[in-house]
Length: 239
Image (cartoon, rainbow, N blue to C red):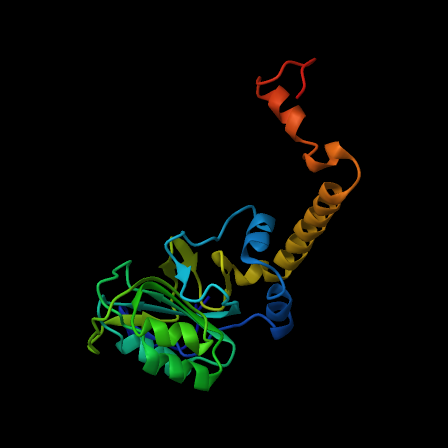
């Protein structure tokens, strides 16, 4: 959270330049897991809606959130965020779901690569999509539109935002891959590693059972008991 941090500007048109980030080791460990696995471990919370998709499905992204709220069709505060972002950060941009203008493109992508940022999530549109997809820089967005934007503001940098239907605080860990994007609250980041590892181990057991010699090992052990508990099967019935 940005509470207590120095703020330039005024409410609605401001920049908080300093944020707290989780340790790099924690980010690196979370990077090893799929977004879906982390989401399962977190009770399927923090997952952005399916409209937020990667331009390049092979993209993998993990880093600390620098948050931006901007007026539709305006990227002034995006440039401000680029100025203060640090290597390994992920820009989280809320345009209030407006996809009518591509306010991120090849120029800003080159800037982000030069600064060593980890990725971008745009709850809105980007442009120069082919160049962005080829750049190797992870870009997740709601849409594509060739129309550019102005640089008038207002907007806010590093205050809480909503992106893809999920609350994002500055410094939260953002993980993105072919399936989409998940937000890991900074205070839960270390616990999320353990929860994700538990899910990986459970899936590995299922993979082994499916590949094993027991024909019944293909099916999850909870299937028949659950069907009985829901009244689909009687207590003495099975499949």
